[in-house]
Length: 180
Image (cartoon, rainbow, N blue to C red):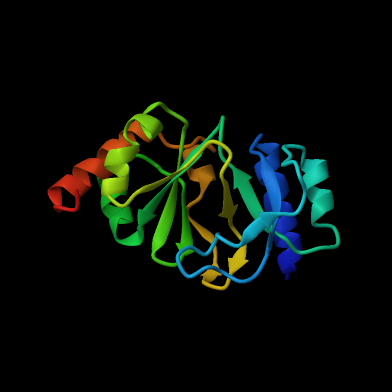
């Protein structure tokens, strides 16, 4: 059986090999009540996309894995109860991180819709994480539980979902259920 640190090391190297900026993260005082990522901070000043560098970080220490949003992807932080319907409505294979209390994280491509529709997303209880925000990634363990991919990025050919299509699905869904 593979150790937890080795699993983190392998997954972090896999993310870096895809060109995704990875940060080694440590919990700096427990999980905040409002969001389980709030007290996690980067261990090193710069993230890396070099699998060798990333692998070295986990050689003797156990850190959480952070994915740095920006040029390649962003995350939409969505109430867990809306995930299945959003998948059905968007008709897309959307990589989703689960295990974050009652919220799940949709990995989407960077698009103007992320900023242009931020107010509508906020009203629909959707939080946008982009532009250098670090999001914890599987298989990191928080006090709320272990993170896992509900839909692994490999099932979408390692391509984040079309953010405009996912946003449309989320906003259409919230309008139809009266939450906007």
